[in-house]
Amino acid sequence: MKTLGERLAQAMTETGFQSQTKLAKAAGIEQSVISKILAGGSKTSRHSGKLAAALGISADWLINGAGSMFGGGDSSLQKVDVSKLVKVYDENGDTGEVVTWFAEVPDHYRAYFIKRNTGIAQAPTGAVVIVNPQQKPATNDLVLTSISGVISVFRYHISGDGAGFLSVDDPRIPLASVRSPEDVVGPIMQVFIPELNK
Image 1 (cartoon, rainbow, N blue to C red):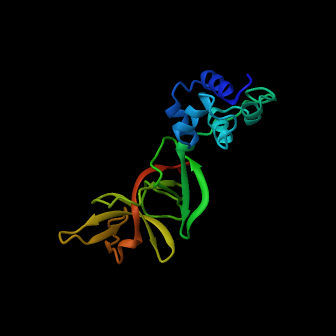
Image 2: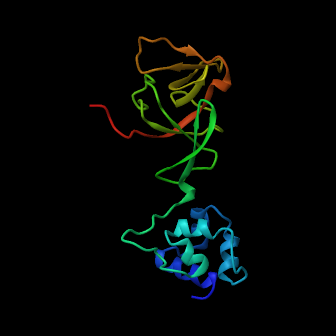
Image 3: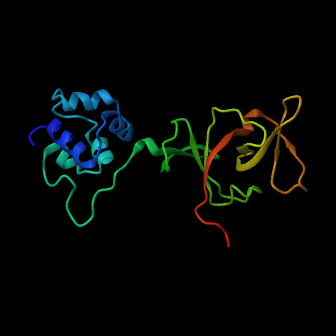
């Protein structure tokens, strides 16, 4: 294989990427970049590393044709699908870290690690929650809150006049009114609980 385009075409075939669109999404680049490379219009690409990671192949092989497509050694290279990466946030905002989620989620979704008891059984300490900060919560939604610098999870309620209230699972604890709309980050869309307490 002499050109980047030829190596990319072979790698797509051997790794099962039959669609430029799917590869572009997995690599986090525009489909037109892949089309240009495959057509021979690009001898090099600043996106080669992202393409190699999405394909699970050696970047050195893709870029230079050196070595083996799948790298050396006993272990194969792990594919990285950036369409499943979610930015991690905490009480201070974007941490600069990402987590790989189980499925593709919209770019504006956020991941939060629950570090304390929330009073909500579906979001215990250690859970990872995916939040949609662009969606308004509805009654009975689980929501992530940031109140006085503390991240927590509550069940959301709306009164007849549109005011928001928060509750936990224990019915003995009264509803708390939402003091500011900014306190509610957004509804929780998905939850991962790594280990249930015994």
